[in-house]
Amino acid sequence: MSTVAAEFGALYGAAPDGVWAAPGRVNLIGEYTDFNEGLVLPLALPHTAVAAVSRRDDGVLRLHSADVDGGVVQLDVATLEPPAAAASGASGHGWAAYPAGVVWALRAAGHPVTGADIHLASTVPSGAGLSSSAALEVVTALALNDLFGLGLSRPELALLAQRAENAFVGVPCGVMDQMASACATEGHALYLDTRDLSYRQVPFDLAARGLCLLVVDTRVKHALGDGAYAERRAGCEAGARALGVRALRDVSAAHLSDSLARLGDETIRRYVRHVVSDDARVERVIALLDAGDPHAVGALLTEGHVSLRDDLRVSCPELDLAVEAANAAGALGARMTGGGFGGSAVVLVAADTADAVAAAVVKAFAEAGHTAPGIFPAVPSAGARRVA
Ligand code: ADP
Ligand code: MG
Image 1: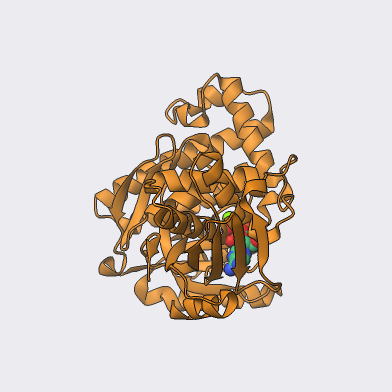
Image 2: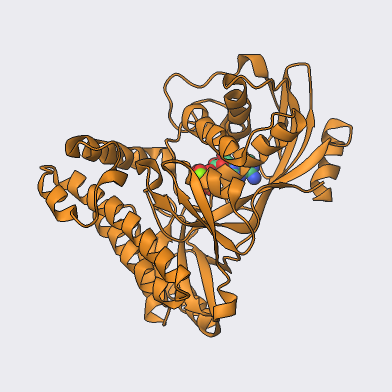
């Protein structure tokens, strides 16, 4: 942390007013459900975006990232505008669109943010499906909330961060990533209802049950702005309209086949089947965790992967291989996590087999000629906080 503060001092010539951290996340289950007003179950990772920040009152916003080549980006808060045609990077600000978008979203909601100096550094792998973007947004939002005394709640900050990503960066993401980064607590998964943002902290002490959740970063960079994510979202919304419901959340899993029979479009039928069944899987996972039976969660993870692979079609060969190799080596279950098309998978294993399963995945990647994956345990960690 002090490194970030020292770098801030070297960059801007004074100590920062404070230092904040916000984590990346991994989603246990409930994928592509958050923009359908559905259920999700993410947990915060130990990896964080850290921001040293000072407030300014002259309308100047200065942004710098230790992880990006290029100097300080200087903007005028009064002239921040979302791009007319939203597409990833279309704001023209590159990475700076994430923190700048948060400043824009706060100001657009009437909050008096009059400028800031910000220096960021992040240990969340970028583009790995672990929400490095939400970590940047939430750390910025929390710092400005504190420095300007805005008094916003964690869910309010998450919604503004999502608005920044939707409208300013141009990625039509749901609210899961920002809520996880803002609201998660150590040792817990966050059972979130994205319809009303109500949530429950679910104890998730896998180690006590002899289990381990591995993250496999395939190192295949996804690009959520490339249209496939937006296409799935549009397809889900079309499905909800065709079924006469507000969101796919409202389609009953018990009567799913009746609903599917009413859909003429094969693609939309697949999308609906994924979303409705994944909402149901979140509830089944919660029931297992509440009943003290986390081992049985594994089979639901794999079932979720098959649905994402075959119905939503957002997986890729590397994610499929990670899941297959892990399961063949004795994992309890595995699935891709996050938006897909690359990024990461989660693997539930008995703790004493974690090394062997990880080695089997590494071996399978090598044999297939893929770049070696990054594998680490997902230790459920704290949400966003002030650290200095
Ligand atoms: P994910 O959220 O899954 O990591 P995204 O595509 O949503 O992937 O966000 C990745 C983008 O976030 C990067 O392309 C970059 O613009 C920005 N980003 C992530 N980490 C950093 C960082 N440390 N410094 C600057 N920008 C970053
Ligand atoms: Mg992201």
